Amino acid sequence: MRLLLASLLRFISRHVLQFLLFVAILAAGHALLEQARQFQDGVARLGMLRDAASLAGARQATLSGETQARVDALRQASDQAIAARIAHIDAALLALRQTATAWSFTLALPTSKDLGNAVARQAEQHIRIELLLQERAYLQSLRIAIGNESARQALLRLHDEHRQAYKALSGNLAKQQELTQAHPLQARLPGTAPHAAMAALQAEETHLREANALAYQRYMAQRQRLAAAGAGSVAPFQVDQARVEARLQDLGHAMASMEGQLRDNWWRALCELFARYGPTAALLVLSAILLPVAIKAFFYFVLAPLAARLPPLSIARELQSGDASLPLPPQGASRISAVSQALQLNPGQQMLIHPAYLQSSPVSSTKRTQWLLDWRFPFTSLAAGMVALTRLHSDVTASVTISASDDPLLEIAVVHLPAGSALIFQPRGLVGLICDANQPLAIASHWRLGSLHAWLTLQLRFIVFRGPVTLIVRGCRGVRLERAGQGRSISQAATLGFSTDVLYSTIRSETFLPYLRGQQALLNDRFDGDNGVYLYEETPRHGKQPGKVGSWFEGFTDAILKVFGI
Image 1: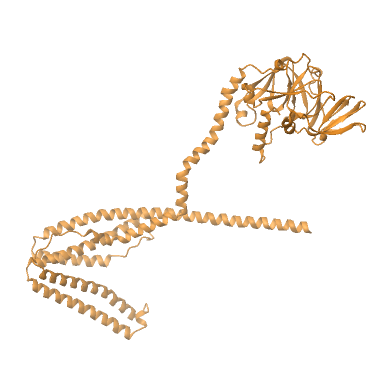
Image 2: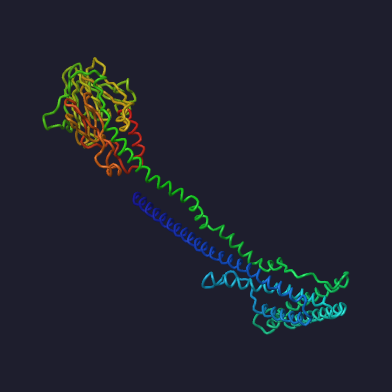
């Protein structure tokens, strides 16, 4: 019951977490898409506003020039011509104010181009209104300064105009107050007749206030002219560009607001991130793809052929070993391994064996623990796993059975090294040995730092076992012992060892594509020599564990062990 409940809870929690993950992914995707849509829309609208502002600037310059030229031409005109122009300006201002609309930067138009044209037309309307107001004020001053009527009469007339404008404004305010007193609720309730009347009065109030302010400005200006010395002279007309640009400040504020929204947009930040670091990242990815190919091509087409032309390695001369060679199996039967091997342990001999491979032994034999294969080579013993070995002695001839009981693919082979012979062997394939109990084990190491063969294969150190000794060797799917003859080549991963009278070299693998794809090593081992032999396992699996998380670390450690000949 407990296991059923635990399984049910795991099932529910797993699918709940999946549900929450899907919700988070969908929400994040929707938010990102919305940000992208807002960014695209904002970029389009900002471009539209900038185009409209640019067009408005051009129209401002054109209309300002036209206004300047028209006013300069009227400086020498008659009072009737100036009056006619003022009347035309009043009519134009009335028409513009009736058709003018408030700024709108989010119109639901079919395209951003339509919206840009609408904003440009609004900007032109504001520019025209401001320029007409400046032109009218100057022409009114020019008309007064011309002198068709005396300055004092003009002052009285302007004062009367101001009183009439103020009277009209006061009457409008009185009507609004009476309407509010008569209908206090309906005057504020949309859809009623009093509210409509109140709206009309308020709209009229705006124009009356503007007319009153303009009349007051004219009156005060005339008073100043009367008070000033040399009254009657009017300076040349100049368009006040600051006042014109003030009419367009809403357009500038809209563009600044849109730019601020775009700066805070996630999509814009993401696009800038890819624009800034994308090319460099793409170059790094391309380098990661092409650099290994280039390195492998250099090794395959340059270094490997160069190493193949170099003289092979020979360790026999340094060892000054005798002519004794390893016994070979019968012709055509190179396989020397079996699932288990029965060995004879004679009196005066000792067997050092890994406990996992000791299947059976006589009860009468003496067993002790030997911590290292050879105390002179502690690192080699530790790296090869030859630690905590079982040491066997027997006063009578004893039969010992050796078998790889923990791995059904491993087989055991026995290699006898007679006196005077020597074998270069990788201790990773060693599971035990039989030697003379009264003599130390003859093991030596030889470095080859000046050989390109050694550097390309990363095997800079060779471990040599000298006879008389019997090596107990393991190999996946079997172990074979063959004569080198006129030249044999095998995979480096399969090589377990070779006799010292063998000429050892490397040969490039036959095809490039399998090497490029990691299916084949760059170099194979080559062995030459009529009397030399080499030892290898049939199915090497040393260092071949693709797909595991720690495979890179295992490959690194394998390379280090190979450097030390282990």
